Length: 212
Image 1 (cartoon, one colour):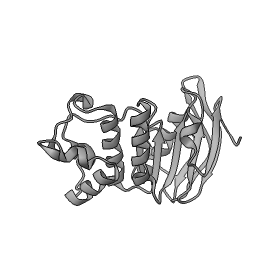
Image 2 (tube, one colour):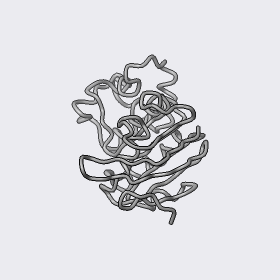
Image 3 (tube, one colour):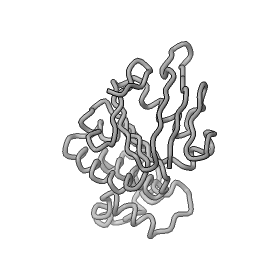
Image 4 (cartoon, helix red, strand yellow):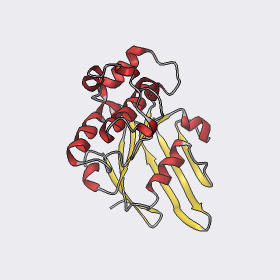
């Protein structure tokens, strides 16, 4: 699904974070955006996803322009993916009516099945407060399975491996292929090497988006 950003500016109080951003992303295109930590990349994704309301400019996904409409069309995987104090299953379904086969398929794609099958309670295993009973890599893969199960046409990746060690990060990146296949993707990172599979890589610097 096509993503269009036109004249987008955003401020936190007096601090201008995004300055007249314009971006067109074609259906099923994979875009990388590199930039320093704290440079506005996460803010841009939160605006695209509808978590923040647009202050100036416009964002459309297909024909959806409001925050409420865009939220339905987007899956997002963030750094240090938040988990609820609930079961693995509930963290994947998030209370939505998603059948067990879809959940299982999402776990397969996120490379979770072998680990889940080794647990006495399987999908009903409690993850603890803020995911305290699972590792960082397992938490990220649960978040990826959640996004896969939602099956949204647009996927936003916000530094999904930067908090992980190299081996775990590589495994999580491999599981992302099950999430991003056939989707429109915007992947942001301060580590440009993690964006090497993107169709295009742009740079966000001092609030402005550049083509290198």
